[in-house]
Length: 145
Image: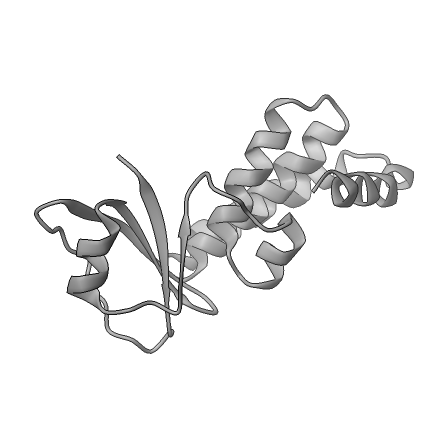
């Protein structure tokens, strides 16, 4: 089954629901109301209304920095994990910290305490890195994106 993200205005009322050919996995909020749908996207749009835009998960994705700037933390998290799986220390630790920061932003709206724990783990990882490597890792990640 295909998976899609439907982006609606933050103030639009959307319920987590299931249609005959789709399921809403999760609804996340930040800059947009992001509805994570598995299955028939046309049926989901018919039931929930026309989104501002739609993204097919695993399709063409914007650079990580664009995702982060647009508060699309789940997509950034997924993209960073793909890079992280192929990386080695110390870049691996830096990427893991960024992944944890994205997860923290996703969780923030639902449970701030969990969000704080994730940020603490991310900062702990970053604190283990040599200070002189941070700018180089930032540049390298930007070039890879």
